[in-house]
Length: 167
Image 1 (tube, rainbow, N blue to C red):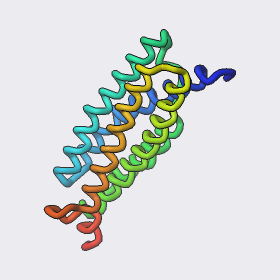
Image 2 (cartoon, rainbow, N blue to C red; image 1 turned 180 degrees about the vertical axis):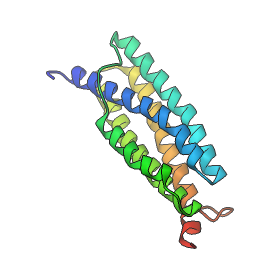
Image 3 (cartoon, rainbow, N blue to C red; image 1 turned 45 degrees about the vertical axis):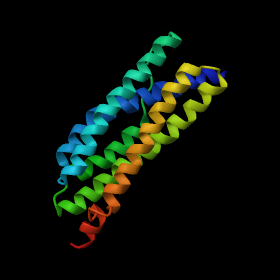
């Protein structure tokens, strides 16, 4: 790669592959969750993730580029680790805690990706792309907060981690 634009396109392609992998994984994560609020969080994030793919498509169209061509090794690895928890048997609360941990690793990766490409878009004076990427970044951060709240609990809920500790 010789230019920031080339790096930007490469990173966007990586994000596109990552998001599409997540579109496939989230229904399985939702099905494996035993806590209804966790299942709903995964289902809601699936819809957001489909929106992330649409935003990336919009950016690629505006840039006259194809979204295909990169394999996101990082997301592949994160989801491979998660796969183990999808099939494990055991205490439901402990399994849900493990699913949250997997999901948060994914979210933290995505936060890093979208923070980076948003910065690249800014430096490339791609305001529309930057706005779309920042919107996705905000949603990824909100999902991470929601997962933390599910894990830690609130004034009205115990929290999955505390429930898992009781076992």
